[in-house]
Image (cartoon, rainbow over all chains, first blue to last red):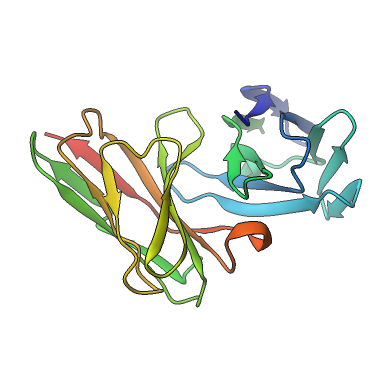
Length: 111
Length: 115
């Protein structure tokens, strides 16, 4: 079946450094890739998304890249701040119109 | 996000008991979803509904039931057949379902604990 893999599962960076989270998907027909941020005990919130006709999208300190050939996409956070600490989930919408989530990456930004 | 509400915030279930989790949205969204989140894990789809009076099973539907009698409401019942119900339950909605479905907006969640 369809699945989404996500690496690393945990990531620690120094404040001001960059963080990169990578995801791969199995369904080559997937065409929508959102990223969610979830703080402890709270709801996931969309931070950025990308569609399959775009290779890169940027929003201030956050960027997402998509490589359709390799079936992987990545989240890049620059100039990390302590408030960036959270769990980040990637997801992919499959050809069956279901959104499959990755297992999550716990990001810690050390002041 | 404020347009989706879930209640209660915490719910305690006794063995053999059915409990119902509420999810309401005022965003006029067609599609609604229920996810289960276990500690340190991702979101797994329980049920989803693309339109009123219609719903489909997700990946882990066993032991759960839903109804979609109104566009704004999508309650989830955790039945006694669900042997390991302790988890964080998240409801979500999106403007459209099916091929047009994109951004999902999540409710604040209900934490279910077994006594």
